[in-house]
View 1 (spheres, helix red, strand yellow):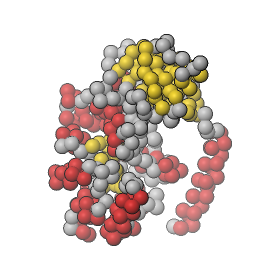
View 2 (cartoon, one colour):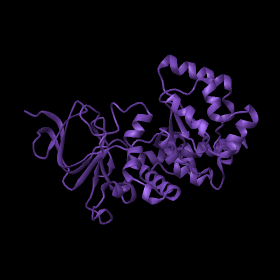
View 3 (spheres, rainbow, N blue to C red):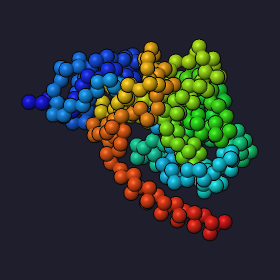
View 4 (cartoon, rainbow, N blue to C red):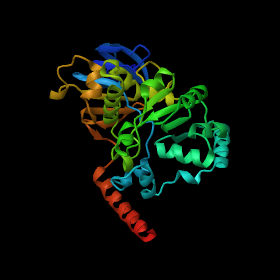
Length: 343
């Protein structure tokens, strides 16, 4: 009789992202009721289904902590502009949220036990606008409104003062670092080393397709690593730190570290498999360097979310992309018509 619903067997490597950053070799993962319930030597577990991970690396699923999914329909809509110009073109407006509204949002979040995600100090123009209108930094404004709490997730956080950092650390908030978007919009470069040295939690995000054009977390990891090396020297860069920012640190930023973000017994089976048998992934001297600087989304062979396989052999098991493309075309024509009529 099978002990597991699924066994991922013969994994060449398992990158756990646990507290010790363990990398296991020639192991198996037993999954039951969507949870990881066993990690053992290859060939020692029996499941109702078996996935042969020979030649593959198993890792936690990457977690995108800041994006705008609806803006995927606006990919390429606002090109060659800075943040303020971008906001005007995509019909978004931070200016409609008054200080009183922020206070009410904070109260409602506490009542519901909900987290809050909001942009903060994305570029200098934002900081200058808030200072001119309210005489304080965006961080101080959010702090006074009661928005800043444990697991408040702050998008971007490119231009934070030392005092801002202290306030955010005291609140237990986290920053979603979006290097690709920040570079494209010319917003600046966040001092991630400084944030982390001051115990400010930092995770990674793509931002939306209208500002970064892509939702590729592999590209984000590489951009974050390259910027970190440029600002702090390559000798201070640890690829494992960058990978953690896309896995367990991202889970912590969302308040979900007890259920996702690492491969550990008791956690949800949110997993990816990476085919190592590719020219650009050999030889394998440093696993984390390979993941951050060489691997890409095209190397992801399979994806499991909560134990359910949603990508098999590089193809979605959930979405008919030919049909989706037709539906997108219809919606985009409507958007263009409405935009032209509103000008």
